[in-house]
Image (cartoon, rainbow, N blue to C red; front, side, top):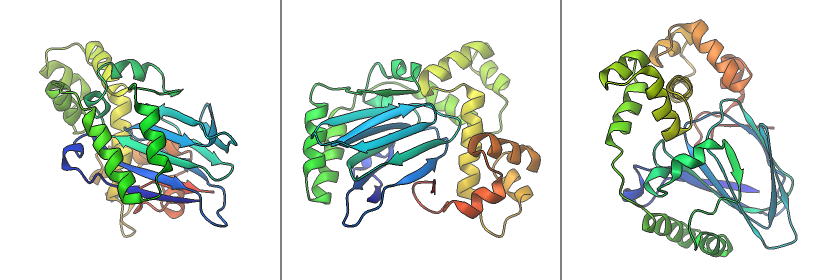
Length: 268
């Protein structure tokens, strides 16, 4: 099986969509098995000819003899998820940036009430169009059709205040100060952010720091240098968060995971 990750072709999608990847069968392809680690994206997957079983911290994708379409999403996770493909399938997975899915689905906050869910079907023509795309043999046509379809579903929503709050959370500002700056109680801020991105401000910040450290890391860096470059308090803080979010220590993580790739996975 092959996985190909792409950034959006359409500039209009860049503010909302981090990217997407296609999983495709291949000759003499081996089943895929990997761990994926926490991020702040809203992840939508659509699979053709497959059965999907979602459990706590595990997703199993099994080939199906029927040509049915399965769609699911993962809105939030703070521990690794094991993903197992037990045979060849066709799949599209999209990574929506924080607040990105809200620009396409007006009742998106309801989706965050569930961390994961099957039978994701946001538009009347969604399943029909996704199946058509997965059945195409031309990758360029698949990409253009996929992106134009999502762009056609964009709805204009004023999320400026929440964008500014998210930017502040991604900085060194204290959560209490962010709430005070906007005239909110800390509890009200927590409610707003959880409704918008599926995590509390502190959970969001922890995952953001972790992802920043991954992209900042260089082989020549010490963990102390990396911790300060990534807004951790110190090296012990970085180690603690890495162990919570990956279940392994940073040294092992950077040794085993190809962090330069678009998909930060630990293949098994």
